[in-house]
Length: 93
Image (cartoon, rainbow, N blue to C red):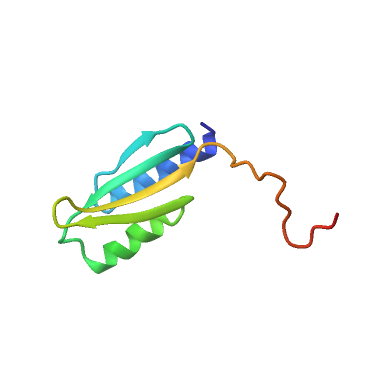
């Protein structure tokens, strides 16, 4: 795991904790996952702040259903994804 990815995941988790949520950080082969249950009572202002926090991740989303409630999640890559020779805009051969 790179120091930047660990700091990114821990920073996101710290921001969610400051909002009163209880995040879990788990390490996977290529990313760190951050998950937090979101109570129905979370005010709209806190939702905005929670979304701003997870938007710092490489991927994020919300799982919601009537059985398990709502779980906000984020993933921070621990490895640089292989580009497979993809060339960006303005690249010339």
